[in-house]
Length: 268
Image 1 (tube, helix red, strand yellow):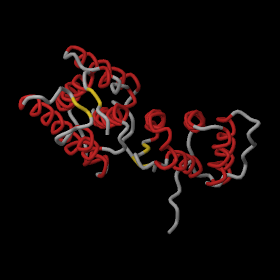
Image 2 (image 1 turned 90 degrees about the vertical axis):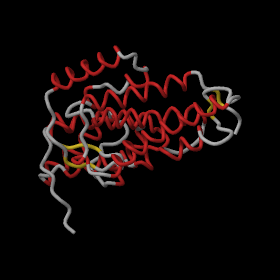
Image 3 (image 1 turned 180 degrees about the vertical axis):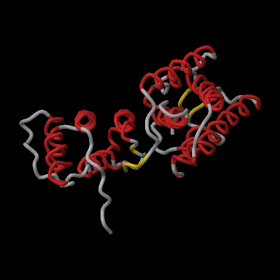
């Protein structure tokens, strides 16, 4: 099968993308990534990291008259198995890459592959949407863990990305609190459900307290099932979210985070 030929990238997009990727890895790690692609014009580890990447990619682009080298660099850099030991930093990197690539109608998916998306709106429009949503959430008393996902790069088209990332953020917090590995519905089941949950929002001494624990666990599982899991497996074009729906989902997340603020963790 012939590899699709991506048009060459503008110099600004190429340089910005290389700077973002370079921040995620050490020089020796970038050497391995460049060799894996392969890009054979790497000037070596004695040079600035992002300039090494930009030189190798731009040389290939000039030779082939395609943007395939930059696509390959992003894909190799953002593969889940490569970013596993720096998952939080990789999520920030993906957000930054999507902001840069949105100008050329591309995005980095969770699996590290680069796919098409709608052309970005202007930065001013994204910033205005961010400030508006943040203002509404602050008026509602939203939790800081939720407000962190009101960023322009996540709100360039609609509210889908902000909600998607905020729900993933709940999974990250559950892992940090408990040390339990996992994701989504299964992670909530392993940390908050059952007769002796690892993460307890109250002493569980009465029927009411046990019902509260179960209800919060079911609420978290419902969010993962209704939004996180379908969105992770369906094409982006099939998912969109209104401001009102986003406010409702993010408000529910705030309730869960506030209960986690006072939760206790028991021994496994």
